[in-house]
Length: 227
Image 1: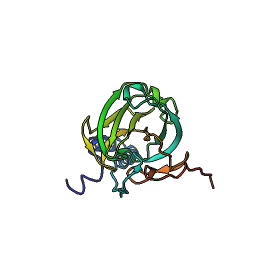
Image 2 (image 1 turned 90 degrees about the horizontal axis):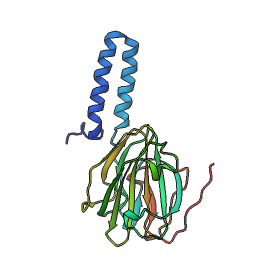
Image 3 (image 1 turned 120 degrees about the horizontal axis):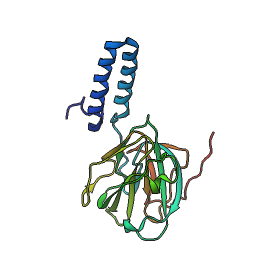
Image 4 (image 1 turned 180 degrees about the horizontal axis):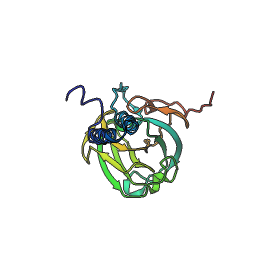
């Protein structure tokens, strides 16, 4: 793959091409419309950008699966169809606005035990009910050293397309890319039983870089304040 092709996610090239063609047509009618089209084309390229990320690799570190803002941290019981037991787990919800990188990354190495697509609605992804009612795609990952976690791609008010590039029984590596959601969305992660979140509501995180939990640590859940 050439350096240029790595600049954005493969999902984005056809959209950039469509926006560019529309811009050329608009320019024939009006320079002002052409400028507007050019700005939208640049935004489309920016939306699908694929920045290099440096992933912490120490054993036990759970990494954020997405860029965005943490809008909720709650203890919930996973849906029964995931077969993760009936003990509450910490669910961390990351909201991605239209200016965030929308590529999703694997939070911790393991093997995919389940891959489940859930058709649904398109409520604002920042709302809590999006986790239950919106269109979404769930991966349940058996971790290499025991235990499991789940990561969920959730479509939002504007997002109408979830792409997942991995399947059941695939072996996945911490920080590796596995999919993308367009345009504006949410990603939930259900931590292993007993894991405490090392992030707080309102914090911004980077997919593939920000540590959101440490399975080898006894640190309590963190608290913070706006300064």
